[in-house]
Amino acid sequence: MTKTSIERLSLSGLVAAHNILNPDRPVLHFRNKATGLKRVRDLIHRASPSSMAELKKKMPDLDLELEVGEATSIVLDAPNDTLETAMEATRTMRTTEFIEATRIKTVQKGDGRGRKSSFSGSRIVSTKTVNPRRPGSHGWKSMKIIIESGPDGISYEDFIAAGGRAVDLRWDVAHGNVMVVKN
Image (tube, rainbow, N blue to C red; front, side, top):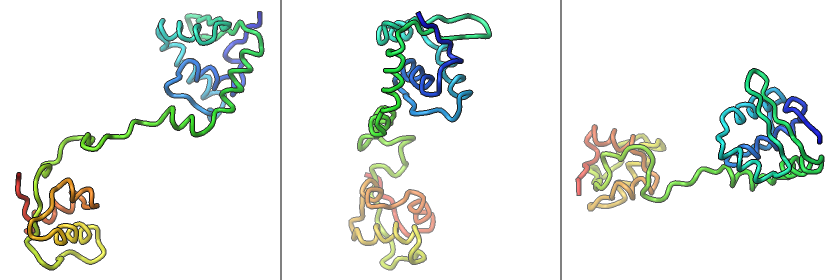
């Protein structure tokens, strides 16, 4: 029965322990051993009974002993090949798998972040036939989108999808270059 305290784990061992305790946010490496020790200790302190049970289920040979007090240690009662297998799996984790595991879900079309724009659902109609904005600026590009949409205008959603910016639209409304018609 080999007992290895958390302080005696190598950096790759700390990474393996971290990824076992926190599979939702795996890491490839730590900056240094002190950072790895701190992060794994924090995970151990925050672990719920169900996550500890999950840890024992995933690694049945692992005996986890938590000491209450200043010194918290993880005790591994397993053949060396079990720890080595976990460390090797962590070392060989491909970057794409790591990215897929930590990727934030992309926002579906129409599920925008933050609050809804006051222009949503509106049509934007130009009051000018010639672009009054400085050529080459972001505002000029946004105004060009509106002018090229014709006399019927363009919906706010299509304006944004075409590369227009809400900040430029607000400026043009304030200066009388466009009208916003609510649908």
